[in-house]
Amino acid sequence: MNYIFTTENILFYVFSIFFWPFSYYSISLFHKKPEIVKNFTHLFHAILFVSLYKLLDFNNINYPIVLSIGFYTCDIFYIIYSLFVKKDTFLRHLPYLVHHIIANYGLYIALSDYCREQIIYFYYILEYSNFLLYTGYHIQKEYSNNKNLLLVSVSFQFVWYTYFRVIRFLLYLFQIRELFVTVYVSIQLITIILFGMGAYWSWSLFQKNLFLLQIEQKLH
Image 1 (cartoon, rainbow, N blue to C red):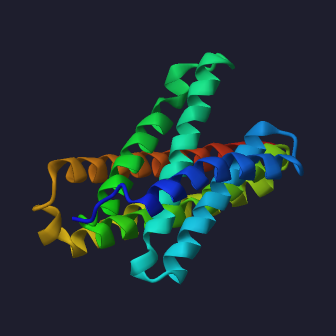
Image 2 (spheres, rainbow, N blue to C red; image 1 turned 30 degrees about the vertical axis):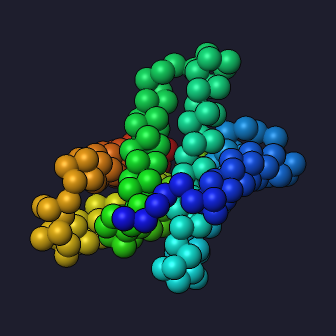
């Protein structure tokens, strides 16, 4: 295994801890709604991770790993801030806390070079699946009165998200099945949890499609 706490990794982690709040602040100069700014920040992270995964050779793959660890760390602090300062309900943020904690654990394991290729490819699939999720969220917040646009948006979300988070996820898991049964139990567990969360959200998008279709039929 590689030594994780190298000077380079630590310095880049410190950089990422400042980079993500700065990104949030920069986006907030163009949009004043915090939930929209946060959504754009998440989209930026997804695009950046996928782009770096495609562009960098595997010798430099530590950079997107550490950058994402910093991103999830910052988002965990944002959730804690929302709970204690904004008095948001804990249950509302619980799925995101669980997701971020296990995401950081998986990235930490990948940083040690254990099953790095497989773990990072799973993260690539997960972040790719988020593209239309964040885009659709923006449409739903900014154009909530346009039911036709909402229906098209949620339909594209469902197809795109289900393809990556359910179909492609399972296909890759089947491809590496012989390795998967031999890895750490913790890795098996977080893989199952991430798949379960993705499948649940895919079902939620399907239900939202049905709901919007019912509204559309009533209007006509």
